[in-house]
Image 1: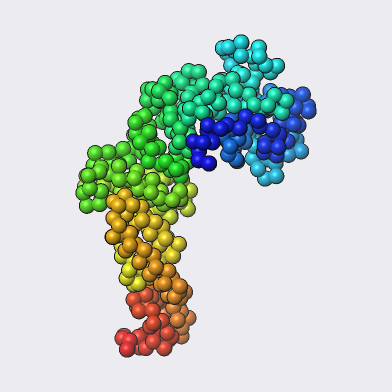
Image 2: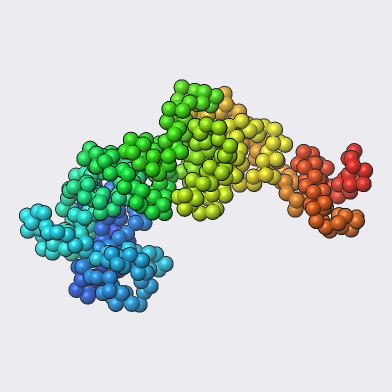
Length: 447
């Protein structure tokens, strides 16, 4: 069953057994102590769409201080407590629990007259981001839908709750979240919400880099990263989040992206890569230096600067930096020596990433002949790696102690000699034998 069919056949009979055990435990404990509590947001939306979710939030009339007491036998993380939110840890899983948001009065009392619920839940839901995230579930009430979230799921529409401008003012990250949900769910953003985001796009500068990064990551590893980048550009958000990518619009490189500007090429590349964050960041950032006139900054430096600005982890910055150094479009892995040299410089784990980048580039250009060549490269890479060739100093048949025993001094000279020997055996692995290497040290040549 594809996603479209799932959306047409919504699951409206959500039962207790469908709710995440931890979330259900929280709801029941609060209910048993007299506090109304409901599962809300993405977890319920996913259940309605026939999917599983790891995103479980609970909303309750209990205050943060009351939740501290109710769950005193569990770890309660107070991050967000000033806003009525705590994180309760159950079986090493974090559950965000939030007190009902306070509103300025119920807009449609008629809706509440049909329910035995207090206005607290209604007011809470009307201050959430999008109608598809206003679905709630209570053990007694079952599924609750005050804002036609079910209808918008059926129509595959992301629509702000009531006034888009007001929802954006409450949390400006919602502009970016709309784009992310469009990419994750393959939904469209409704016109009023699009208009409000365009008008308020500059406010994204007020959001912390960490929060922007988290949404950007989800866009990049979604099934529709190209669509996400185009929406960011269309809505005026790209110039604030990734101005380097914005400069690629209208810039042409006929040598590797004929008849397309660099922005189109990069976003096509994203769409043809597997959902691996490092790979897609390499595709996104590897060529953004091109439109900068007379740039003396390397691709690695530019990528690192952008990733640091967005507060990415050092491990990601390092991996992306390794891969953007290589001109992966032209590197030839049919030559075994090139494979050994690459593994020696960049690591065995990165060679498969280069092959994936090559594959995506070939798909964009629909180059059938190159696809066959890539298959040969993949085979050659497998063959070379199975041979376990010497590619690092620890693989050499002699080591620093051997050189010291021969009279060499510790330090720069010894390190330089070992590196020279490594270059020799990378070129000709069959020479990685103790007697051969010692012969070279004595005569300066190998026979």
